[in-house]
Length: 426
Image (cartoon, rainbow, N blue to C red; front, side, top):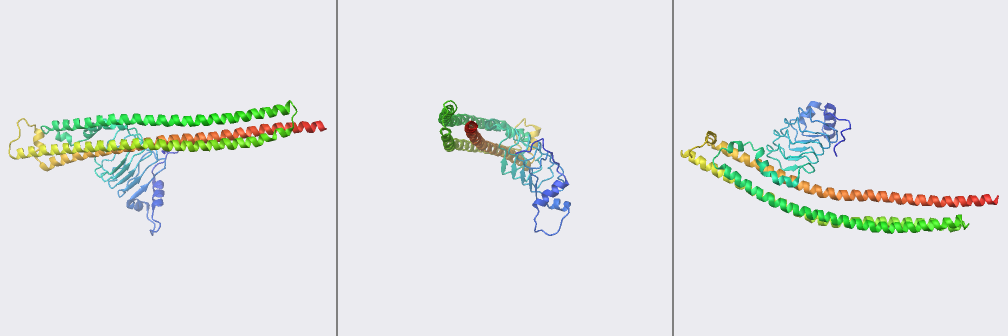
């Protein structure tokens, strides 16, 4: 969990860095190194759970391949552009709102931004080596992702600013857009249908749980009321009819028996809750798997559409380059288009880079949707489990208090009657 903002805010200073490096140092390594030497040789730095507010003072860490700043109070990604060798970056459980500052970290393979406040996937186009991106539990809406993926493809595609001057490329872009929009609408319809089924499963589980608890509460209340009537009757016989104290002694045994019965019922309810939860998890898990399958199929079609777009643009470029070589370019070609066709390698590199950007966007979006689906399911189950544990603890405390209060009232009557009898003897 992110540190509370009211906690003491830590600064990344020499003392914090030295302590972190000392913790990860190899104890078998001989000779003491200066801090500067330790910094320059370090390939890993772990500053987790330190209440750090800002990334700073990491000069000299150019050889870092792993940086862990998870579980702090960071609100931005900054001052790491010089860490060009980074491969693993953990910024999970912070307060980060925007993905930024990673343009020069082109070697990144694994980035975790789980549990932050990010709303938009951006700033990762230069991370061509990225293989694992964790963006679960942010403010990104899963179904909204598929509705904006086409725009996401081109929003940060700087290479398309050049390619857009090619004649007929607008038709190819339009084909890509139509294909993505069609698949996105289908996914949204299927997703909403599955969401309705999930809500029905939740309602079914909660109704069954409510029924079990209502039945248990009814039986418990009746047993407690029966004991209360018995206690009242015995007390009245002692106080009004001057009955013997021995008539009250069975109450203590009955009270212990009642407590055992009520505790057994509570344990039965715990077991029944777990059985219902297992059934719910199985049913919900089937729907979650169907969602995962739909997501996989959707992004497969998106990938296919992007591949076709890439092939079509490449084909168009080759045709134009061939005509340029033969001096047969179409009339009315803009100067920007002509300039593009001067350098074949540069043009093909732009087309390839544009394709890589689109693929990176699709990969990031798929990762977000998968993680969000997984997190939502875990959150639902955790909520029910935590609520049940809290209820169980509260119920046991109530039963214990009931027994103690009842026992105290019985003993008080017995003591009073005993004292009265002793006073009468004098």
